[in-house]
Image (tube, rainbow, N blue to C red; front, side, top):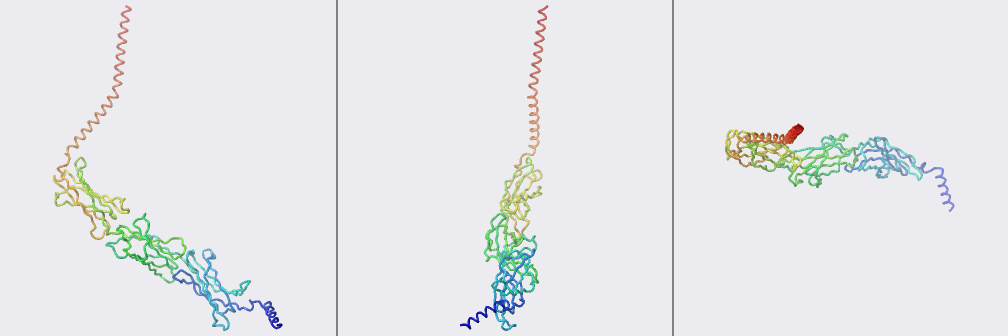
Length: 426
């Protein structure tokens, strides 16, 4: 019993004279690799190992972000493994994996500072730091050229797939994608299932942050036959950046025809000197032109007239035009008879023949109002104007004439009274 007590006392004395830090071995300088991107770019990892620790050791890493050399408070995920040292028999080898999960952290340049130490109850002893590691430059996914944010492609006939290459800057590579479509700028986007599109990323390598997103969209995702389909692609690598990546691809359907033209009944204008034919079509992109050809039942020789084309913004189909075609046919310079025309409206953007055609109602120039009516109309109007002016002047002058006559009558009456009085006095 006394022997055991002596051993305990000796142990206490030994620990008092020689603390655990003296009995432990300072970890050898860690050797590290990284930082590298793992788990499909979602994690930045640094791997460090010390080939001489005894009896055990711990590891940790501090991370700082530039600009400002701000210490990152996001906790690291640390995995440890202790094995026998191959270089120092009897000692241990400690390997540590430091993982920084990149979701929702700010872009910037990051510095990892790993260190190994002996973990004592009251403090960290024999701290050994690793050599400086390369910086990790993290960039949120953005377009390389901001002016490429809106791309347009006009295709006809309808293809099976739309393919676009988008130049981006990103580190790590983008790994979060979503695609939506809408028919006009004011409608709510409809998110598409991943079965309707595919996304592939290619990095330029050699430490460059540049890469290319290849977007392939199946046109079967579009079920509504509309002129425009606005695809909205969002891509992210999980980092928080200054700009939000949003790429818009507008697919312009050239195989969508304008509406069938409607034609009004011809009318005589300019006091019967001209007959006007008017036809219009909606949903024309991006503008249209008009042409008139006489039908087989119409007089055709030496036609004298002019054609005017109006392109106005469509209210029913935003981004497109209403095209109005007007044919002004001279009555005096064309033969008397029946006239009828076929109007053709042709879009400026088209592939193949995408014109729309309609036939105007017919008109007989024999029904035109007499040309002399214009002169009579002017004479009558002039007579009415002169008569009106005379009537106004007469109404103004009538009271004045009445007052003058009354004054004269009064003066004549007074003169007669004065003469009678003079005779009476005689």
